[in-house]
Amino acid sequence: MTPTLFTLSLCFTLALTGLSFHRTHLLSALLCLEGMMLSLYLALSLWTLQLDSPAFSLSPMLLLAFSACEAGIGLALLVATSRTHGTDRLQAMNILQC
Image (cartoon, rainbow, N blue to C red; front, top):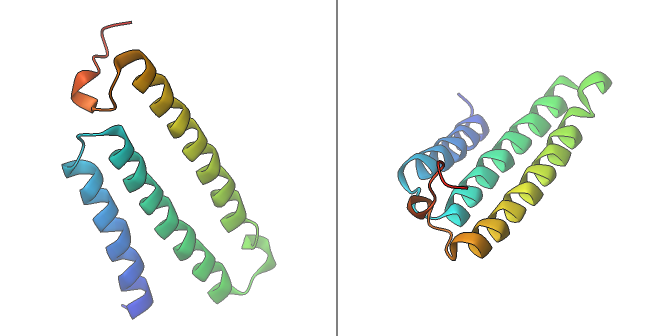
């Protein structure tokens, strides 16, 4: 395993463990998701550079566009839940309530 691949997989694993263990606030969960998307973007970019194929050159930009959309939706949900519930704590949100 190359050091670059090890670093990217370690970044993804750390973001995944942060998402699974520190789920107290919605903002921390969104930051962990952004860390996962950033490590995936870097890995996909390096993979397309190593392949040197023009067919895969658009895929990192597509992933970056989806990541930006995910971040925008996450921030909109953060604003909506903080307005309705008064906090961004995930334990305060009940899925059965309207």
